[in-house]
Length: 288
Ligand SMILES: N[C@@H](CCC[C@H](N)C(=O)O)C(=O)O
Image (cartoon, rainbow, N blue to C red; front, side, top):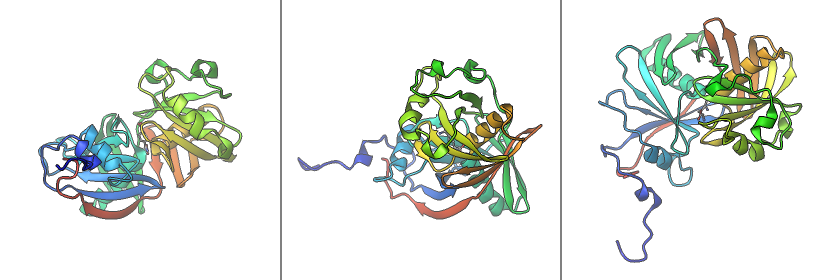
């Protein structure tokens, strides 16, 4: 390299073991956007924290809220791993699971799928063209926090009375009078990294807008503000029902679209729009 020539930033990332060009799908669910990499034909996954960060860079890479990598699984139709834009991993991603389920069901003409994730086996169903995913049972003592009823413990200049709900990943849900005025950008990162949450948390600000209808704005752990969050919608619906604000079937309007949540005996089911935007291949050597 000539003196003074700046190395492209991607070259600072660790090399991939396998340097064949990587094909990916760009998808979104209600504006929550994803890079989807299908590694079912590979002996093992290709993703690393460094490569996820490089692909997630909206200026020098592709950009995404989450990256989902498909892998084959002995006991399920497929397995899914999730990565946030900062290179951290997430145990759940409802909107990416819906997108991947829609794509794989269309490929195999299936009407149901079993999907292994870090939180266990999830089931996806095509009901008259609408994809529903069972995100599993909510965890109400996430990381030892029952229902975090005392906002003082959060060390925040926020009034509120948040509810902590685990959906395979942590969520801290604030009910506010007006979601549009909620301090998502200023308080989201503070709650995300509050010592109350040893693994950090996703943060939801929700308001009841009509019977069984919630308006939701989200700060996602490892990513920041997103246009929607599927596991966050599930956590919010659970919290709203536990507080007597809604029934168990809730419509949730996020910044990027509307999601449906149905908390049944067998788990919290999630549905909403999915879109496949394009399929492309990373340039040879990208991330190397
Ligand atoms: N957008 C997702 C949630 C992604 C994971 C989250 N940021 C975390 O770190 O837990 C969804 O649709 O559920």
